[in-house]
Image 1: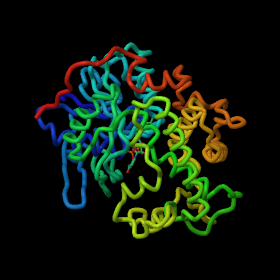
Image 2: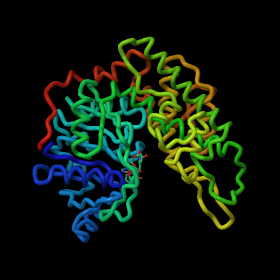
Image 3: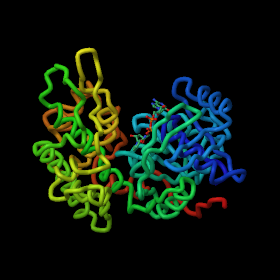
Amino acid sequence: MKKVIVCGGGNGAHVFAVLAKAYLGSNGLVGIYAPYKDEAKLIKEAMEENGGIEVVFSGSIIKEKVDIISQSPSICQGADLIVFIAPAYSHEIMLKAIAPYLKEKVLIGALPARSGFEFSFPSILKDNYAENIILFAAQTLPWACRLESPGKKVKVVGTKDKIGVAAIPPEKAKETAEILSKLTFARFYPVENVLAVSLSNIGQIVHPGIMYGLFKNYEGLPYPESLLFYQGVNEEIGSILEKMSQEIQSIKYAIEKAFPGLSLEEVKDLKKWLFDTYGSSIKDTSSLVSAFITNKAYDGLKAPMIKKADGYYPDFSSRYLTEDVPTGLVVTKAIAQICGVATPMIDQVLNTTSKWINKEYLIDGQLRGGNLAETRVPFNYGITNLNSMVAAVKGQLWKEEVTGELRIQN
Ligand code: NAD
């Protein structure tokens, strides 16, 4: 990889760009494409003033100067690797802008992809005549991180043990995992296909599900203090989450039954995911609720709420809704609709959370609402049945098979 571009100018984008530069050194060029507001200028000026961007880990600091920072999509010209690290609702805006500048065999993906990446990215690239591109979708960011000062300092407060990544075409996942692992010093492992990443997006259950559970009876009055989020899960919320998870498992089984060769093993039930992800951080593993409230990693984390003079109000503009509904749960509902799987609990959560974000997705239990064009449902890209959905995941809908090796310097 001689030229690596990060799309996005936020928390994770800073960390990735610095670590990639630390890895590549003078053997490669790392850039940040930040079209949002005047972010590119701010980051660039701050980085120059500071002599580089610092990534602060618990026991170390890595400081690097990124080679180029620009709000122009032409920065992507000639890139070998392009990584989107930004909220999923911004992916299509940036992808459409950079599409004319892509070369063949470039590796493009998102960290994390969230849901519907597998329909949106191939379709936009096809519409823009960008050919022979290898796509990847990662399950999450390797780090929990917060910018302390854009262009100067970002703090890594936690690191994931391992991160799944799938590719289109699927057989490129292993090489992609190796490249990302080198550039980020994290451990990526290959996942069978991009649909598995889409459906295993655990944020789509946990974020809208807990928000729904906490605030479904909210009548506009302030709370005296901010509510706990994960550790606010009680029996009732636990049961909501469990049902949402079971509905996604039913979608998984329906697809695996229709396409026995297409594994969705990565799509784990919520309890299993919690145990696999947090292991010894969970003190009491006897139930889903106890797994949430005794998980050390969730200690004290608060629900998104806005503090006003008279108390705390739920923040319905939170990314837990604005990202995890349109590029999460709505996509999963669409996949369920294609598979003919009923999702009464997910519908209930969608009906309420979509009102909170002033969007209309479901009408009488079917995705027919006026705001679907802003989501990544497969229908938006002409994918309306299981066959075309699986073809999209395999990369067969949008281009000829990609051949050749991916290579990385060093
Ligand atoms: P962030 O909150 O820092 O992202 C905001 C940035 O996204 C903006 O600064 C801008 O650069 C870009 N952006 C937003 N709207 C845009 C638009 N319309 N056009 C172009 N660019 C736009 O993001 P982050 O915290 O780095 O998170 C990136 C992704 O990783 C998200 O999906 C997030 O949910 C996920 N994630 C983050 C963390 C974390 O600790 N930061 C942890 C796990 C997952």
